[in-house]
Length: 221
Image 1 (cartoon, rainbow, N blue to C red):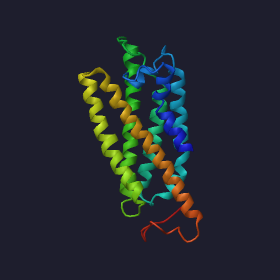
Image 2 (image 1 turned 90 degrees about the vertical axis):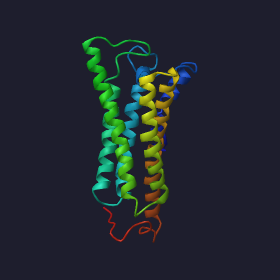
Image 3 (image 1 turned 180 degrees about the vertical axis):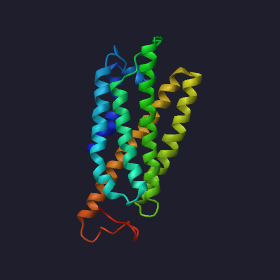
Image 4 (image 1 turned 120 degrees about the vertical axis):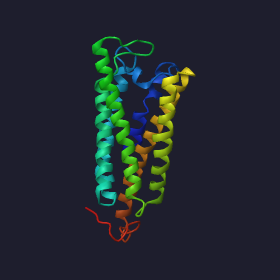
């Protein structure tokens, strides 16, 4: 439930879409959180709450992963994802859809926001890659497969499409659509982390199953 709630909050563009009478799906999501936009405060708060919920999952996720540097990289990367998302929410982009940020202060604020968003997204997909690496020999297989496909489809393909349409702006709606696909893949990974934590917890609760899916070298904290 924590993971599902965090995933829904991260995909908060759906909330904005409903509140705008089903319009604005072609806009950049960050611009919907700019000061003066009708649902800006709500969207920024949901971003921060999402970050807190994701971090709250990490003790259980960490316990389920094989001990080693890849596990630590996975956990630290998720923390960076949450921190970056929080900073991006606090330092929102100053200009909404159709507006031009032409002052020095606006450009600085835009740089801080965009930089935080890039750090957040990059860190998330670093965690996906690290999770895949650390579960290659230990499983569970479903978790490893989700990590693999999420990395290539959400982290690589969707990001490339977003950058392409962001540069070309042709068609205009495609940049917003491709960004939302990218966001949905991140939400899917949040749910996957929660399912992995629940899977490991349930496995530990059943006598005689603690060693399933582990290599002989695996240790637990």
